[in-house]
Image 1 (cartoon, rainbow, N blue to C red):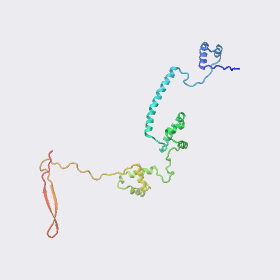
Image 2: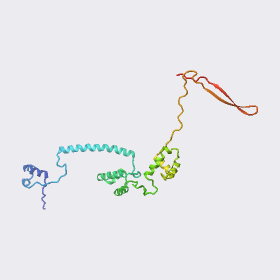
Image 3: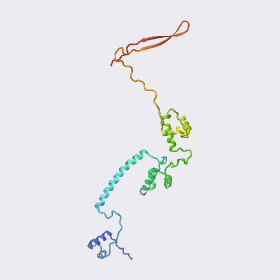
Image 4: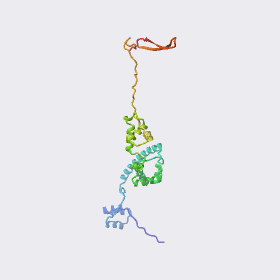
Length: 268
């Protein structure tokens, strides 16, 4: 039975150390054949590509491990609070609208960065996002159309522009038209050519956006403190009473009686 002889492979750092020092005993001391070590001294050094950090010493590796452990502990603390808030709010992206394209782009970037470590299925399970919705967002991102509302609102013939909505708000909140009801104000805006919208649309915008019509207090507040006299007989009060009675002929007449009240005086 024949056996194959396998060639021994030595660490390139050992070969480089022997070539730089010129001392073959470094290798022969660890049971490397003398002929092999002599061959290392005769040939030129080879260029070896290595990953960064592999040539670091044990002390440097220990410092790096300690730094990474602190960073992992910090991330665990942040994630612990984040997941607690996440479970408290219980967001559900299956029924939650994300209208702004910047928010969708940020979420797509986070998913693409995390799927390399966690996997796409697990990431979508964390954010509760369906694969079909993710695909739709990616197609919209390629067309630069992540926003739910298009940049041109006139794509829908009956949709109001931002300028028209701003004009309605200015009329509703204006103190000049505070005496005009909202329904009549819509008709007035059509008549003067500022906004062409039905009264029901005005009522809907006022209700949805929480606009408040201006109100003006017309009647002043009544006095909170009564009459105060500084000394006796300073103020007199006269009470006039009208008393009606019947005469012998059946007619009704009135008689006035005037009584004087005492001095209305309060000390101090």
